[in-house]
Every structure is written in structure tokens, then in C-alpha cells.
Length: 261
Image 1 (cartoon, rainbow, N blue to C red):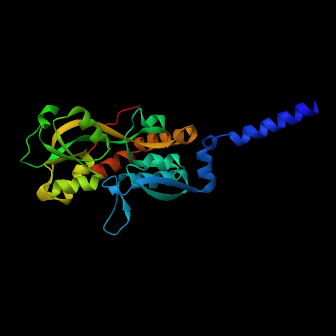
Image 2: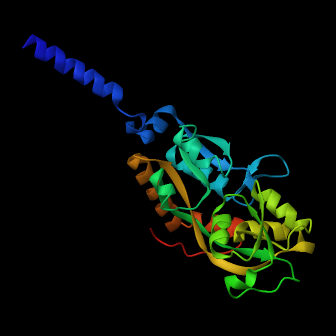
Image 3: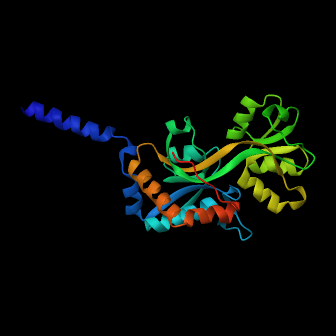
């Protein structure tokens, strides 16, 4: 019996040591620490950027502030890039991602997505001289600047083989190429295209080809169902009280009907 008791105790210790870190309740961790770490973009206006005063601004920033306020904790903004968003979450550097992230089956194998909090249109945007494309085949031989490895890069590579894709490391570089005349157009979402138009009225881009609607979702680590449930309740509540639609109107200048997951 003594040997059995020792073996049972040893097994219990081993199981406790082997328990994955993700088994911890992140919601309770955040509430206990009194601080919410949110991963945000700072180079993708109007989602997230630095304003003229050098302060963080944008829809995602405002949403993060609202989330922390409703949770009753302090907010810590953690700057991420498009490529580092999910790795930062998986590594535990942030508690939540609010970084203009679209949900895909591949990404959903790594993280858990919330209900959508905003929606934009993905498309190809160009100047007046570029003709409107009614079909993807009509993009043939047109140069399109795009962020390397982005959803748009992948979609255009698979569906518009005749287009001349000019790939850049990030969205600001792709937009800069369009503004400098290095490409006829650029592929992005309607919110970013609107910001480009506001900042560059002489070269305001027009929608030349609509790809699809693209909702944005918050994301948490796999297994953090309590935190995800809280975020979905937060989004539902602020959709009903009008605060979420107001953010879309403020930053995107348009109302949008959000698809449901």
C-alpha cells in the first residue's frame, strides 16, 4: 500500500508539471493582474497608427481601450506587425489580438476567433486612368502592389495569374509604390483605401475590382474559452448600445452589416 501511495503521488506530480500553460484561465489571470495586454498594428491606418502627436489611434486602438475599460483593468498596447500577430499571441506576449485579423480555417487551427467587430471590403484600388474590372480576368497585365504573404497576395496569386503582382514587405510600402507611380494600383481593404484617399486627394484611389467582404476578429490562444466568451459578450453588448457601430462610422465613414459566425 505504501508503494502504491508513493506511485500515485508521483503520478499526480508528473501530471501537474505536464499540464500545458494554456490550461490556465487567461481571463482570471488578466483580472488578477489588473492589466490587459492587447496586440495592435501601428502601421495600418485607420485600424491602428500613430497620429500627428505620436499617440496610438485607430479603430483597433479605440476598441482595445473600450475592452479594458469594460473589463475594469489597465490597458497595455503591444505593437505587432501583420506577420508577427499570431506568433506574438502564441508566445504569450499578448493576451488578446485586436489587429485587423481575418479568420481563416488555417489560422483557426492556431488561435480562437471572436465574433466579428468590424467589416471592410477587400479589393484592388487604382487611379482614374485604370479601367474598372468586372471580372478577375480583366486584371490581366495590370500592375498591383500588395503586401507579401497577405490574404490579398494569396488570393490574387491563386485567382489572377495574369495580373502583375509587385510584392512589398508591408502595406505602407505597397501604398507608397502606388503613390509614387511604381504600380497602377494596390490591393487592400476599403478602410485603408479610404485613409489613403483622405491623405492624398490628388491621387485618391478608386475601387477597380471588388474581391469580397472581410470581417475583422479579435483572437485569443486556443483553449481560452472563458476569455473568448467574455469578449463575445463585450462585442454583443457594445453592438447593442451603439458604441461598436459608432467606431465603424468614426474610422471607416460607413455603416456595415456584420456577418455572424
